[in-house]
Amino acid sequence: MTEEPGLFYSRCEQCPRKCGSARSKGKTGFCGETRELKIAVACLHFGEEPLITVHGGSGTIFFTGCTLRCAFCQNYQISQHGMGKAVSKDDFVSICLKLQDKGAENINLVTGSHHIPLIADFIEAAKVSGLKIPVAWNSSSYESVESLELLKGLVDIWLPDLKTLNPMMSSELFKASDYPQVAKRAVRWMIENSALNIIEENKNGVSKEKMLSGVIIRHLFLPGREGDTKLTLDWLKTHADGRACISLMSQYTPVPFSEDEGSLCERNKSLLSFQNRLVNKEEDSHLRKMIDEYGFEYLFYQDLSDDTSWLPDFNRTQPFSNALATPVWHWKNGFLA
Image 1 (cartoon, rainbow, N blue to C red):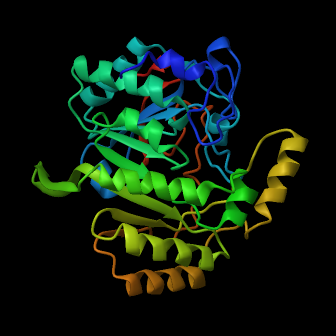
Image 2 (cartoon, rainbow, N blue to C red):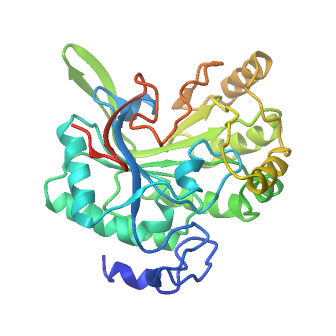
Image 3 (cartoon, rainbow, N blue to C red):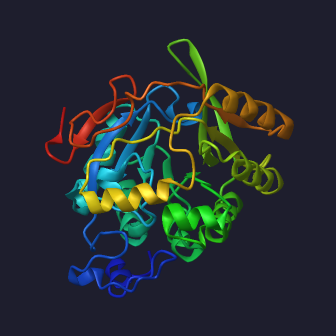
């Protein structure tokens, strides 16, 4: 870091919205957050791509707040409703080191785009204090290249979403008509700044592939919007194939939102832009045929499932199902073991 992190919060222009909020004075930006860095939960997560979970699970840290506020967000309690606890640099370092001690394959930082200067400073401190495993940046891609430059040399693995390249959809769902342009620029920067490095790791007689550096680009198929997914895959074939891994997700699940009537009404209007339901077998079949035709060099594709029990509730000490995660730290209780 070449500048004191606090300087970035006086008139905040960290994300593409450039809302100018005086977050250093306790004002909230579009992201809903002040200068304080808040975390909701830290866990060993086994629901990420195999290259990330490997043997021990991904050491996932969920931050409070978000620059997008997606209408369908499964993590809305923390991304939009402010659930979480403010942590210091020492707290953050302790959480990272505890995850490492528990066998995490990496430190997976989820939705931190609105706090890049502070997180970069905290990552540096964690590395100085003994963090040895790779650091992964898990984001919506709605972030400026100028902000991402602060993470250069600190982040090893990039896990960006490429949600849509249709500006009408991004305007309806994220209130960000510029999302396609911004996200493409961010993803290209990530690819240019992180070469794929995948090794074989053997543990207890079981050999698995493990990513040490590189990019996994995620795209969530929205029911009824096959054309939008094709548009995204076209771009990925041209700009990412062979240089990044592609992860096509079919897990879209309607969320039983718990919020006031006005917020729910506004959310439901946005959700009218696609079919707010589970992906059906016919769509899954079409997606599989489509993805085969592209012939991506490195691809992940989820199996179709109608199981909704994985939807998180961050009020619980175990926000996920037991099969998906082992909680290590929670905003209500601190360290759990």
